[in-house]
Length: 490
Image 1 (cartoon, rainbow, N blue to C red):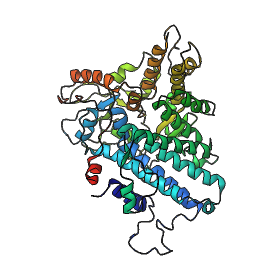
Image 2: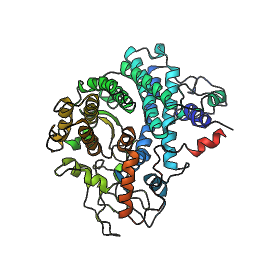
Image 3: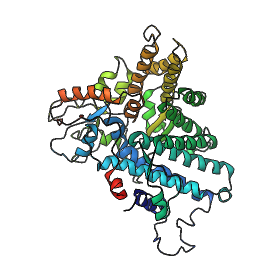
Image 4: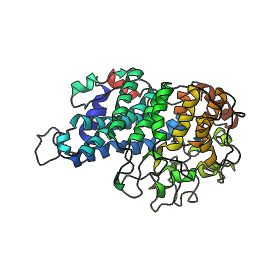
């Protein structure tokens, strides 16, 4: 039978990646037509291809990542829609009931490999003499290696062993030879190598405004630090984080500015997925997806699509109760004013990604991937793991994040040992980075997923009568490898 990479890579790399090259590849390759053979002829062609390697991120973040990163965890759930049950595939992810043919899980898997395939084509076709610009050539390599590492980093955490494909797949033989899933440590090694290459080739900042939003060397060092923390190599992670902390990034004075489209790619941003309002197939729609499904026009300013297109990523009681009294982040992240007309109960919903816009379902909100506050909390955690020191730099970093939120500082009297500080940092990550797709990955990394999710399940079942008896029975740490891919290998 056909291997998964035949469909996933041959069609992707030869068809999708070169959007302008939708030709019949069985025909000869006339020189006046662009195709996979003759497309890479200039710097502009490589830049266009790199732009294409970012594109799958938009679908991943609007379509599936918030389900795998937030709803899978204890941060969010969904508004039960008794009148339209077509959203059960998403509900299953929340309740650990999804099957191996879940369309939303597969969408994440597929789009990640589409991105990887596009990066492989760029790197295999890379030719400095065609680019004829040393800075541009370095940036092309840096961006492609970062993106490939980023796609793989999320895949390996969520699925475990996956195929490790580091070259363009252009034949059936290539597809067969690259289909086998590889050990996790082998994939981590490839991620580290790509991220290091990216860090060495990318600038810390771009000089042209139209390059804002591209990944930088600071983005690559954040990815490396996250990889090392997953591997519990806190000293190596801290080496990378020191560079991030010494860069020109800083906290925004106002927490809400991180999600304000007028302030995109600002001083706190290290990497964010770019969206553009308008009919260009580049817009975001988070505020519609996260709005209560029966919210009418009051929440977005426009009517919602009927059915199960809204009512997702709804904050749980666990999330609401995690905020300390006086935490300014709560009111800037969650609205508590909607009363469900069917149940007369308050339905909280995420407002981080709510902003004025002119076209229905086409918003201008970027999605933050890495922020400076994330780096500060990562560094505080690493420093503590390397050796608790009361009121040292770890406390300073933690308290700067808390200060912006209007909270009192932590002290060594309140956090008297390494364990107490560790738990405080983990808690701070939950509220600071809420609804930004960090929670499930943090639970996996810190080994708390099963314990916390079983306690969360007990609370959910006690509160919600519609939860199936089988929900949360098996707290699977990894998503099932997609059935479509398994069937293609039999």
